[in-house]
Image (tube, rainbow, N blue to C red; front, side):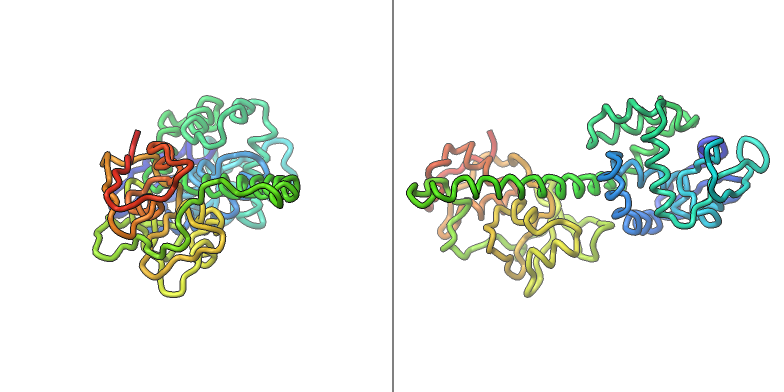
Amino acid sequence: MTQNNNCKRFSIFVGALYLTTFSVFAQYNEKDIYKYIEDYADVAIQKMYEYKIPASITIAQGVFESACGKSRLATEGNNHFGIKCHTEWIGDTILVDDDELQECFRRYSSVAESYTDHSIFLTTRKRYSNLFLLDIMDYKSWARTLKEDGYATNPQYAERLISLIERFNIARIDTLYQQRYNSSVIREEKEIVQNNTSQENKTTPQTKPQAHNKSEKKVFTAIGSEYSSDESPFTYRKVFKNNNTYFVIAQKDDTYEKIGQDILVLPENLRKFNDAGPNDQPIENEIVYVEAKARGNALRLHTVQEGETLRYIAQRYGIQLRYILKYNMLEDNPFVKPGDQILLRR
């Protein structure tokens, strides 16, 4: 790849990042990286569907190889991954100094075409076959195996990809793929179950515990609480963190559908993350988690106060409701009363 052999310097500073490649000095900063992620997250996720390559790896390679799309090869050839012509290439080309002077690189009509060719490049070459034995969510193994299989000669290539992914939380776009994939599977399974049990439900009483007391209107809001804020490349909304779990604060007239559209998460997943019912909507200032909550909290016990439900407690401490039910053996009795002691971890 072009960057690996020609990168004379790649340094990360607080305010700026620099990449020297093709004897051209390309400068970019953190804002450029966030914009690159935002611009190409969808196409990377699409390629993850089609070719089973982690979107986080694709994005990180694009950032690193193309200097956030600012390198000459990227600006003049739409080539974001430094793929050379090779003997089989019959498309347009661009000549760039690399290992040798005026080497042949592939030129694409669009960046999307470059992303597709990158996916084809990895999936059709035997040398990269080990990649597809790995867990698609394990970006660290993908980065290291890419290096081991010869994608790059730079000895720090894998660690630089991993550092980019972790510093800018790029792995979150892999979860978008997982959520959408799982949601489609769950939707199909639900349809089958509903069809198979429709007759049984007519005569069999419903005994499955509800996630929360639907008659109870008290919800956990961010009013009067302070949480650390964080940056997100996926939404204009301010993002916060509670119990190591990201959330946004619902605005007036917000819905799970609207929030989901803003942060690229399916509304059914938001309801699942927040232990909400299928017809529930958040109220103003309510905390809305945008990823799965934790399985426990550092605090061990909570004493139930007047009006609190298990869902309220789950939202307050950033814990999945099902684990609170499990820890307290409340699967058959999900309702609580003031004074009850609730375990928040195993």
